Length: 472
Image 1: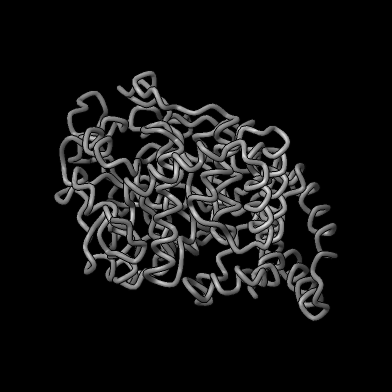
Image 2: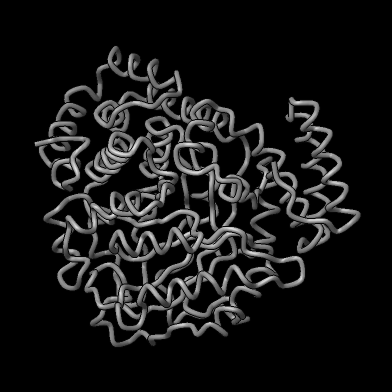
């Protein structure tokens, strides 16, 4: 029985409802009149339901698919403008007791060296990240209650926030760790995390149980209901995601949107972010074993349809994707990307990119400076902004502003100021030249004259006086 407000996983992610939605989409994938009505509704910028979105994803009319991509670009621009937020993952430990068949951290893998960062090693990693210019991190750790207990995660967060190296500071720590209890989510909230991120991997229950044969992650309901417990623990910014390629992509897409609808219905606030990773090669993992992998065209359409369905959510694509793939989806819906990433434990202090403890292969291996310059040459504004989180504009407060398309009034000035911090402190000379031209060109998009004048004053203070951390 499908119930969007239910707290039971198999009721708010109903297999029957997903199957019916996919059947409805198959029946209407060539129904131009229905597709036009869905696009007309979506153009209002208030989102569409999972069944309507499934029709758009299945649509096989070429000219309508062009309209889908055009609308996704329009919605992305209206809600997020040309800003792209930068972050980096920080792997704390690859100890794990689960048996996930797609992840090299699985317990039976004896070829991968196991390592857990000490607090001193974390300091060194954070300083290396700060010296690159990063301001926000996503903490990653395998599930192991002995080696990676919640106390270790909390201590690590405290360490990270405490480090101020030169002009560097990590201003937002997002956390991607295993499903846990309401009590532990309260502890994470009290530690000052930004977003709690947990990928579902797959919403298809029987596939989920096969892909997670052993370990606590085998429990589909406990994992799927984790975001409810996080919300109950006071974390109002949560990030969803599936690992496309594990099961049929249209099933996953529909389940992902149903999860977003559930959070909105049950808690009044949907996901802060949605991530769209794809299965990729890794130590002892052969992606040929996963027959549901998706091509670049399908990937682009998934991104576009998610953006149309959930216009308010941030969308993340990582360095799993190639430069070419990332460039294609930036204007279709992506608002956050990682840059200069290392997916190994202790990778940022190594001059040569280490491979022996990586979770997956990085396809985009460029430095952060190269990524920043690339974005700016594409007319995007790289942003290191963490203002909303630090000003308490999270959860329903952020969503209210975002849905009203008002968040841009502070986002663009904040993005330009954090970009100037990067240019002043970390950028190569060529990147500085490109960046300063970009800042000047984007100032005219700040329509409030008072905000514009303050932004100009603060940009000058950052560049000439060495002042830092302004925010609207």
